[in-house]
Length: 434
Ligand code: NOJ
Ligand code: NOJ
Image (cartoon, rainbow, N blue to C red; front, side):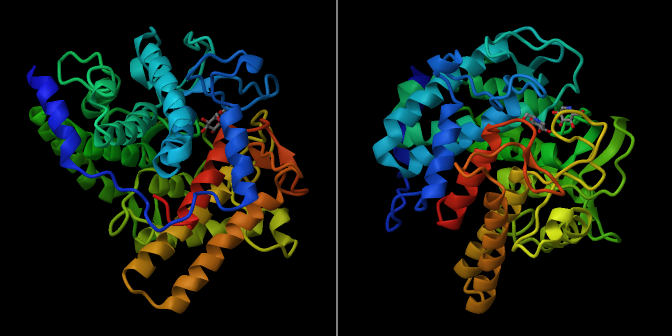
């Protein structure tokens, strides 16, 4: 009864922020096309045998097999669906159905026995746990998933749809059996533990994972408060504050870059430049709008510049005079999309992350009354990364995981869902949608 009351009250605390004044999101045909390809990889999808809520990482089933539900990829992809739902009321019902399916499937993932509990990185499309050797746990997964569902739950509450939030998405009771709180409890209690990075290769403490964990806890505390779970909110805030202090360690003042990994305990041995676009992804997925760890943070800009300079020289494809620099994961990368015996390549989603980061820092500078010319230059810079990534897509706009560092042709898993999500996300940011 008390819980119910808190939920109904929660509905009136905030007014839903419609994006008044902006046109419909995704103004360009190429943006729309990526959204279409993204949605084609989200269940229900009978032609692919996908039940509701399953999000395949890519359509390729062999060399490499990406026909799995990865917790990280799915969370990031569905967060884009959640943003679309917020900004495109006409499509909202369809997107809400997809999110509801994703919630049900995610709860099933949480309840499925795995080697590492909630940090388990991937599942078969049937929902069965993947129990072969793999880099596990990957603790960014539950944090990203929490953030995606917190965003959705927040809008549902704004719309007065309490019954869709409590008890399945969030319920104050402990031990928790609700989707968001299970993930938040896991993050709050386990964030200090070493895990594999988002590239599934190195065991240690990762900037990407830490920032995702902090984001989940900060936003989770707001939701918990709203739903009358004040003690949990306090606990989540305390943990987030400790992470905030810990994050300072990642800035390397002599190299002038944000370190992707500290306290390395295992995994691949050939990575030593400390340059990694996972830092850019961390900022756009889990960073702040302004100040520390925002796109305009000088430490972030300095890291971006170092990455651009490095990748400009190592990828032949960047010599061809085309606008914008193609970015990969990290300079020493040996993963060619199938195996690690070779050379790494530029990726669509990492190149697009630079575009998004620059669009967002331009918007922030404009909002703070920055020099109009500087803002314009930054947007142009952002456009160049966007143009560069799209230039390597197929003529039908499809995007794989990578494009070859010499030829520029698509490589690796086909129709990588995260590539399309990265494009839609950058396009939303370009056009001023949060
Ligand atoms: C597959 C992973 O998904 C990829 O990130 C990694 O580079 C290779 N395995 C090698 O570990
Ligand atoms: C390899 C990437 O390194 C990893 O981040 C991703 O989760 C998987 N591929 C699936 O797309």
